[in-house]
Image (cartoon, rainbow, N blue to C red; front, side):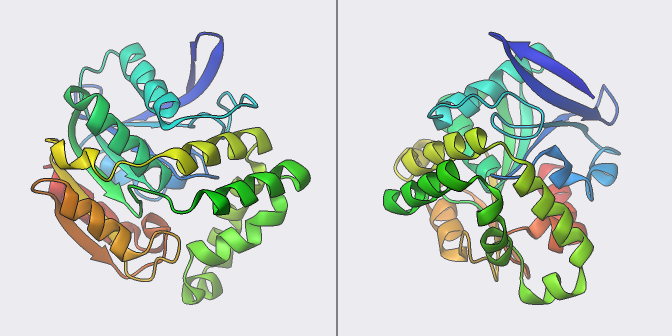
Length: 258
């Protein structure tokens, strides 16, 4: 584990796998941190130089109390790639991480080789929903929203069968700084890549969860339809497909990237 600093802001970064292997960035969701990927990193690190990081507002990275934009989050990743001397990398992003991937594909396509966009969307829905959540978190913190988020992220069957894993993710949500959760929610509220995706040339795989309530399959289908030549795959999971179906998720990522 290491920390990188840019303009006085610190970001936690973890590297796994051979230094000479193709770089693969794993970008996590809103309310989690780089440990979201723990289940598949040992496998992916056999083939790739895996780069994980806590996004702005999350984990041990900088969490200024401000309105973030998707450009802020994308430029953070560009700064990390520059600091690691990585000219171009594969990217696998889930939910928020997939939104950062879309920003990269639109604004810095030469920095991406291929991208996997999992359980994500090109447009995050009505601003009033995000504004209500932002007000709630500013008033009461992140913890009161955690149970509702967990219910929307995991299928009932997985929650019943894997309470320890669900509790681990819930702890990530509760541990997210309120400033970071609100700032990132602003970025998600304001983004819209639907038209811009039509001109993207980065090869892409879109993964949807058949039981995903947070980013329903139709939202992923829209991304796949707008991205020229994109592939699309479905897993029998909720929003946290990499946790509910880690083996199948890793199969898809490896199969597409190689």
